[in-house]
Length: 145
Image 1 (cartoon, rainbow, N blue to C red):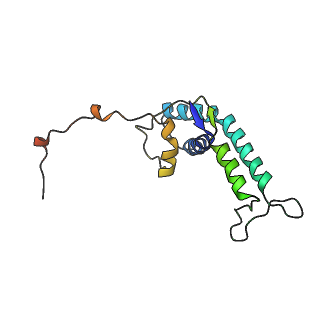
Image 2: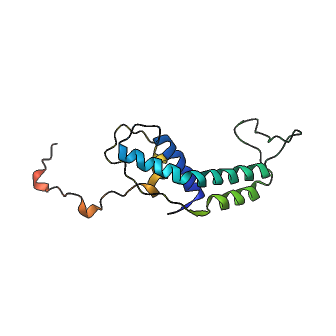
Image 3: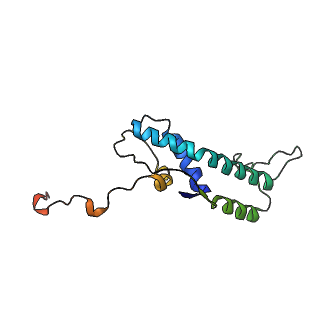
């Protein structure tokens, strides 16, 4: 399956969360297999991302990356436009990875944010097409006002 570096990062991090929850055996195996399959690609993408940040980061007199005074988690970047182009190019790179679709049907008690669900879409088995969904006979429905 071809995924972008960004998708690999998001899927891996969400699967890592799921790997720490109690799941049925089949789902746990599918998630473990996918984590193993994505592990190398994730590490390479992350190393390249960090290298790009280090290349463009402003440095202090000790060679350490400068951080924003307003937000210490934010690193100050030289040539931000050029940095953004390189980072977008990196994160949009397609990589062929050996991941398999899996289903969370039948799992209970899983708590995922909408962002987590969106990140898993490429690897979640699709629900039945609408044509296969059971239709309800309108004459069997009572409307209460």
